[in-house]
Image (cartoon, rainbow, N blue to C red; front, side):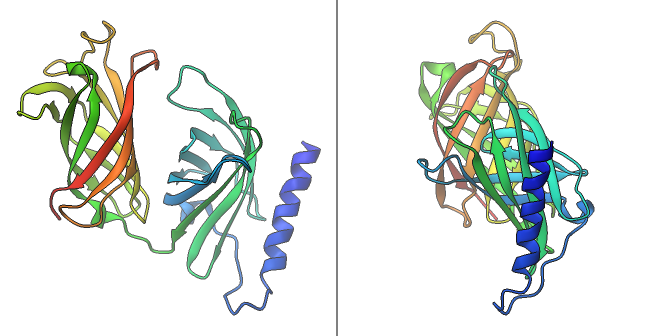
Length: 271
């Protein structure tokens, strides 16, 4: 704990040093945990040999952080100097890894920013992350009807399928989508999702998770004999109707073993 505390104090020192950098911006201050609640644009650099990965993060409580990349949950108390000693684990995988790290939270020039490092992620070195959300950010405009097309549905020997979802997103960036049928190109039901939970970052990155299974039952009878499975989709929502963005999906069974995965596309169907 002594080594970690020294690192945390070093991060806090960088914050203090940056307040008078002469760059013309406002001085940084330490926000409360309640202020920090909501979704964030996330950038993770797994290690020095791996390009940065964008995603979405969710902050709640005092202080709990859910990351879409790596899919993990971490938390720790927000100290008076803005530092957080993080402890947690990976989520949604049969191979659970315990994680630890440290972070610094601040608000400056109208932006909440949480940055830090995570160790034991399975990469070659510590992963660094940066999370940002504008003060007063309102993500409700990301609500609307979207079509998620899966490149290889396990329900039809890897044929292409799609699911139309009505996203309802709050100002904070958390949201839901009612269950819907997975259809083939001809409109025949192949599978079905239950009610989904979605996190949408201020700039459109999203992570969606929903129960998934056979049409009409939500049981993965044709896949593993027990259910429901779980569908996860990661990507960025298109900003205009009729436009599409690339995404990815994973379907896992009741025991979180991977059943199918691959590319996906997301199309905005209306406003």
